[in-house]
Length: 94
Image (tube, rainbow, N blue to C red):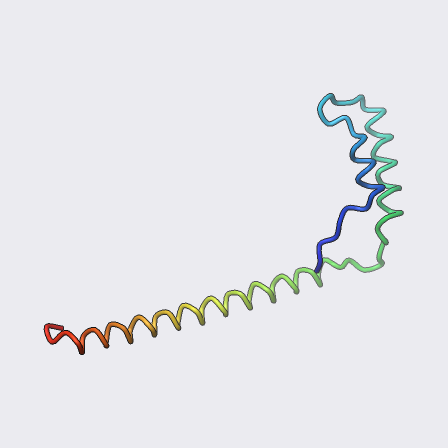
């Protein structure tokens, strides 16, 4: 899944929100109505929720990363064991 820039109309509408000074409920309600319309215009509404596909993708990415980390850890342990064995062979005091 790639990250995309916020659509310009959405960003423009958000820039109009009175973040630092607050607003009255009537104005807030109108803002939410407008925001919903702009969001629907900019982002296609799909029949099926893509979230399950996203969850599967995230689960696969995490599983792959964990498998790679485990393999790296096993390689690291093997290399350390080989170094220990090599140093023991060099040092007769063991």
